[in-house]
Amino acid sequence: MSGAAEQIELISFEIGEQEYCIDVRSVREIRGWSPTTAMPQTPDYMLGVINLRGTVIPVLDLRCRLGLGPTEPSARHVIVVIEHDARTAGLLVDAVQETFQVDAGLLQAAPTMGGSPQDRLVDAVIPLEHRMLSRLVVGSLFPAEVLQVFEALEPA
Image (cartoon, rainbow, N blue to C red; front, side):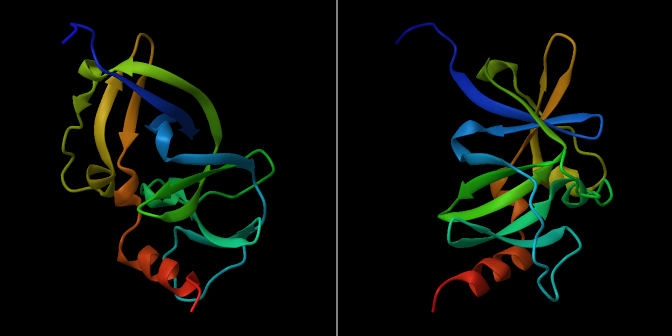
């Protein structure tokens, strides 16, 4: 066994003044903003659905999902298309920053902040030279309400 530290490849993006990241293996593609079709009786953070080359996928407003208020989508926003547990969804973010590798040993457990929504969504913080990133738990972005939308979109 070598002494080299395990490397994790992440992709970072901005939401307001904050930087977040997810495992790059979860990312299917990155695309520009396109308007969504609203779905009835969905949570505030569900913007609606888009047609991704013949497949209808839900788009989540990640800012709103993190409890930071709603986004007013515009042409400058980006949709990060992710896959998790054979489900595909879009995450609306302000901008994608970069893909990068980091030693797994740099990840620190996210502090608990009194039960805020972010506690369940962020599992680690990564202190880098001049910035700090929060790593999101992709599976936690899909609570029961979103899973119901996935089920409604599945072919009969």
